[in-house]
Length: 366
Image 1: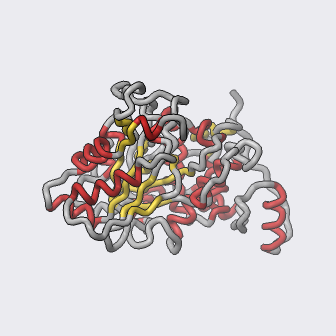
Image 2: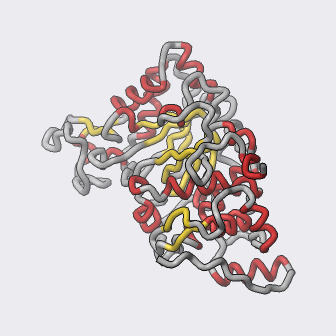
């Protein structure tokens, strides 16, 4: 197979408004203004990788066009990323194109899923990725522009064009940008990427295609069982995909603040205990599921008896498919982050081309 051609150069009026109009008319932007990806800006960004510009990181469906290091850098510049964000995006593209992520299905579905990026390890602090107050909200360049660069890549390399190949019925605002950091310092438990088998000092990225976060408000419960029971209720409502698709590879996520996680830990609860409790309690009886939602369209977990009205259907196949992440600011609010149940999250270390994990993005400048 021939190597991808370098990105072509175009000459445009220097007026920022004219550049925006041209990029919008060409379908290269998400509707918001972009930073012009000049040769100098792209070259500066490519200093933060040891991949050659034409090295293909992955082919991105449904178009299956190659996402080269240069193409990723171009979209990073357009999104407003600092040059040093590039290694995170390269890891993210690698994660999303793993078969278990089912990127083709996520790019073309009617489901409103967006690509949630969770940044772990020392690079999270180095790049100032927000993991605390207003973690899913505005105000942080790294969160906003990393998430936006992913969306631009999904359009410009993958061809995910709304109403053409991206058939989301409603979508959600996370399709502009959807990035958080993990509050590793505030958590009483091992970090999420450690659960996935990586060393605590390894920087990594997890990608999960998910709906918008749904606030779970319980400021009253005095016991872990009641508090997490509230979360289980929010995660298993009759309109959610999970209760109808527990026979498929699937995951659902609960985001806890450090305050809530510490309170649970102080009472002897591990992260695995939380996952087990949600698995056992985030369920619906067959009698309520029957003839609504996605009933009988996809398999349920094999231990569920469809003929028994009082049998309870879980939202995932196994306890470990309830993902627990610690992030957010003060308070005991939780966030239910639900998925379509047709894909699995993938965690990738942030590395050099040869797979060696990096300790700092500055290593590429040495």
